[in-house]
Image (cartoon, rainbow, N blue to C red; front, side, top):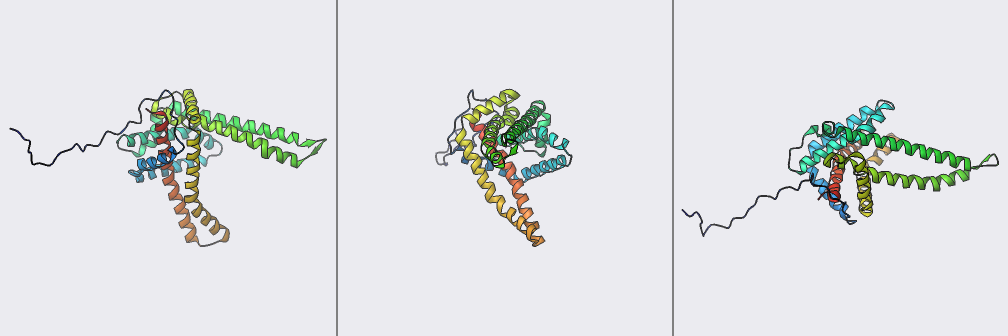
Length: 283
């Protein structure tokens, strides 16, 4: 029997297309994107997290609490935080991967980095800590050298010291800081999402940044403006209330607003970092 009815309305396939996999194959060379790409990252990052915004807020709160607890331990807490931050971040990126592929996001994604890729993620944390320590040694040596240069004929010249610090030292610090940022910007994503070895992740991250200097600069500036617009008003209100001994109610409200904004901004920024990684590195 023929079921085709000539008078029935036309039918079309309304099945949504499959979600793109963000665990796809790495490109041999990272893409070079336009300076306007970061605005797309910001939009797609928000789209990615807003469907599970409540759960992402809980994840952010848990991470904040862990950071506070580690910070209560002098010295060792700071070391532990530096070592483990890439592990927690790796878990967050794995959670974003799950959500991006249409899976069910779970609260314990925050700890997924301890179950998967723990050793390489911890290795990146150790490298970060070691590089920062080396950076401090270099800057300290430059500071001592500048101080000696400011001594003339046994007398100390503050103007010479200030000039050396404000020009030479600052320039060196900025250059080294940019190079370090380029080395580590995408390492956690590369390791957690695509199993890239630790040292290879450093070179790939550097290459990805080197091919997208304008895009990353625009991204950093856009994020800075957004955070300034969102966080500055409650921050100024808090300072005004504290300095003037103002209303306790206003102080509490401003602190709550600031805190809520931070726990929303944090997963959103991770979403943008995930999206930018896909855009630059994934086929």
